[in-house]
Image (cartoon, rainbow, N blue to C red; front, side):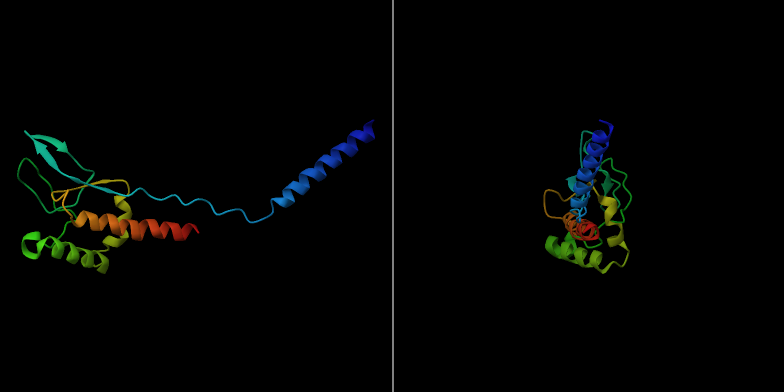
Length: 146
């Protein structure tokens, strides 16, 4: 009786070992966790109250309409008035991609944040930031996890 238990126990251990050996294959890569994209919102006030606020202001200094906003490092130095909307956006893209101010390295700061500007719903430099975030931050996290 005692020897039967020992033999059964050994058989069970052998069975367990064979299953463990089967697991000795490369495991699938862990699933990539992407940082959430930023969203761009149009800042607004109505009768002195903020209707739409943001986490990160991405514009130039603004001291009117009840706003007291400092110029953001993410501001577009190219004005729509001077270059037209498309021209200002194109120049901004080149400015950020040149990485003169190390802004490409800071894109991760925008993860999941509401970026506030005055342009939305029209195309704006916030769209460039979102696009570059997707390309630079999300793509690099995919490749570093593979």
